[in-house]
Length: 630
Image (spheres, helix red, strand yellow):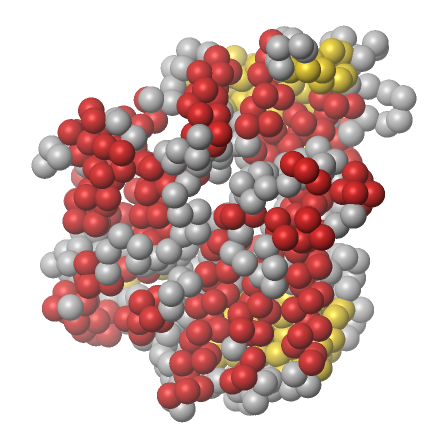
């Protein structure tokens, strides 16, 4: 705690890190607005319902704004966006529970409904992965059930489908927010929670055959009775790229299982030239689904908040290397021993071994001359893990540890944020965003049929247009070559949202929303050790250097902070796309639940104590420690 107090004094003097010094907050929430009705919103409503005995005395109305016609699903699970062939990568046992589990909901459905979703009732299991449409229907059912229960407590709920909030006007004097909708309505609220999902601002260039994202998936599908009888390129080889692969391959052929249980792909007549080429910087395919001992993450599973404080440097920053040495090594060594990976367990006991060494070593284990043959090898271990209920402990533990770090990331200095974003995250997302076994079988069948390949290298989109094709430059090992595609689909994922493209312009114009500026602990050491530092993102003020990260600035209770580091007390933002700078490892439904639970818990604590919270991390970690679900 000594370093924490030292850091507090340091920040208070120089007004550098706003996450610590929010002013006292109002907790008025009579009329509450939620922007978005996807997974984050659903879990927010769930946690409101869990605390309804307290909150029904505070909340009169809840208004839910959704730009889609369909409420309670979210973009990844919406039939307007996805299709039957796109699998989720999360099982029922990994989903934070709503009113009932996903498995229980599936078992309640009749066979006719299940047939439409391509699901056999006798095959339903808590560990099975299902398509996104099924998960979307489950989420919508739970959303509707939660709303019914909230209404039962005499809270009025207004649902506004096809209503996009295009701006927010904030009255700081009266502490009220006016929402401007696409229908030219102006609606006033005491409390606003931004819970929006993915944002795809880049436009498609259909004449050039370029698609800025695969969504909605129907836009890249061939018209009825036609084929894309040519090679299609994708930027990325992630799960989004596989959505493209699974949807397009079924429109151009059929998968058939032979008598030995092997999956084969047969092209349709007229689609003989159909093929997909995936471009990946490292040439990696995702790791595969694995059994877990404890599928639900927990912030303090392996250590306590006091252990986190022991990882501070002399300037009061949490350092990743200290965190790795003091908090991660023991559980990782135990995990590798359980997995019989004694070589890695021994390496971790070397005092000179760093987190970069760990990432490099574990990445090399996943590097193959042929990524598809590597996947075939890894599938044996993955199948064995799932069929024999044998966890792969190291993958589960590293996910646990980075999940914990994510919810303390405001304690990191800029240089460690950069280390996390640039070196650790690519490795983590490849490991943790695991591909389901059925998806891997499809990839391997396509590979065996010579209908898919992966090209390693950094891709640059070129402006030149040749015969209505997309031209790209691929750079690998200092060599360059040019490729052209009649169709090229960007599957690199959600790009970071900057303040410039935050969806509510008046909040930006009036400086109520700003970028997070995170101080360096030792800027000179950073410059010395990093030749490629980005000067354009570095600013100097109050005798310190700061790095300007993407996303927006919020405190630890997700209240937005203005240019003077003061909280905008009536507006919270829990959208992952807006929090990438401060919460780099927030992804998936478990983080949706945890983030919204932290927000609601901060309200409850303020109400019970009759004293608004300040939103600093020291206060919020008490919520982490007190809440068994976090």
